[in-house]
Image 1 (cartoon, helix red, strand yellow):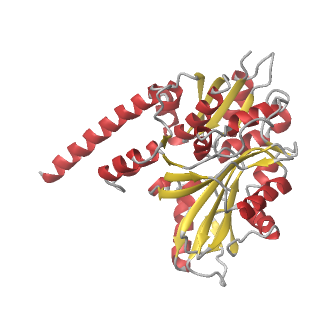
Image 2: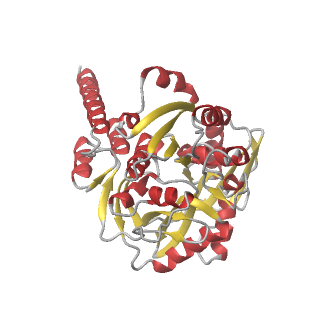
Length: 405
């Protein structure tokens, strides 16, 4: 009997990465696609997400992002099974926190990533100050930071804050990438926070303002923990970063073995073990003037983890087998060799919005061995992406012609 897997997330490339990973195990896949409230009805009515056209997807449901009640209702009313406990794989911070907030109800019907089987603990550990405090205790470098608390849309900025600073929401589910910004003055920081509040429904928010560090190289990794052993198959270097709403997300990167980075990888493993997390996670870190700094731990699948699947280490399958009580000792746990990877969706958005040229888009695509959408065994998502590309290209040409008139 095929085991059922429910993948919850906002972006189709991340969800599709998990879909194709669990397909290696022959799982029955359900997608819950999250859309922002302001265009939720339009998406449901007019457009199935690209990953829903994968041959491996059996069912697709739609949910408003940040609507926790709607998500839990979908899970309980549409996704329970009488003869097995489906496995939930969250692909964004909201879904990871939401299912954990209802763990006591859901765990009777589903397997869910968790921290020591304690409801609400995942959201608690999304607190970046808490993460950084533990990381520092374990010998990891962290940037100095101050907390800015917004209460009913009012806030005070510490007078002793160093500038420039890098500001971001304390908990990742608040505002996503839109809350990130380098601020060079107190006035710019205040303006950014007010702008953020005017574009979101949050009245009580905490921001982390860190000393700005010159970033020479950005890195990430994706791993799996069963609570006793932590597996980190390799590392990812971010070679090209997205712009606008995709700021901080890799458009192109390079996966490589951990050789030479064993010390920091061991400390990452200690961090995950100390927290007690069971599930797939990702970690961001960076090089500043020759020193490696811990940035943050995300307690959910990171989209770039598909690179490890393509290089022979399938973390979603590892998690499923572990949850089902199967032996994972014989599974590959370290990648061999390296490869460049390419996020077609991020790159196409950057090209369409004018951040990169068409030549840059085509160059990044051609020089990358691993792509997140293109797959000869599962061609429908790529066909739809190519169709979307042709439409966008025609629109840009028409705009260009009209602009010359």
